[in-house]
Length: 231
Image 1 (cartoon, rainbow, N blue to C red):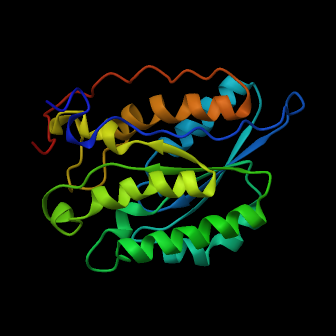
Image 2: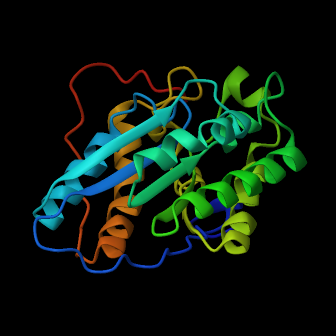
């Protein structure tokens, strides 16, 4: 028996240190460095809006993302993100590093992430950085990523080594029935499915870092119509 979390095991979240208290009403900047899973997914805006509601103060979303991007691209963009000076920074590249076509391979991915996290830590000494594991892949997208689980698990060691946070979403996805993944193309969850998994884990952690109690919003009602989820 593998328990309620299945073969992936339970999430291995690693909390980041809280930010110093901010003056009332001061804006907070949330940065996002990653792939198509955070490029036009809807959940980043929902996370920023939810955190703003919890704080009672603005949250600015700064996104440096690109479909198909891997950690080497992220390393090349580190200067752009440093210039944006986020207070909290989310990083996710494992899903494309694991791609057999244009990924990095596990050893190179780990080395590139080390360089990326080192550059970000040097350039953003006051920021709180969070690595994020994301959703599984199925069908052809899954076949092209046979070591995706290993890339996600590598984030656990990278987070501990670099002293950054980790929001470990992959086990949360794997604990759901596949029909709940809502990924018509085998990789990109529908916005509602992504928000239902990501926000309950991410929003309380963002709130804790910002010094506020931030419960996730209730899930939206299912839309009418046929269920087109991949089963």
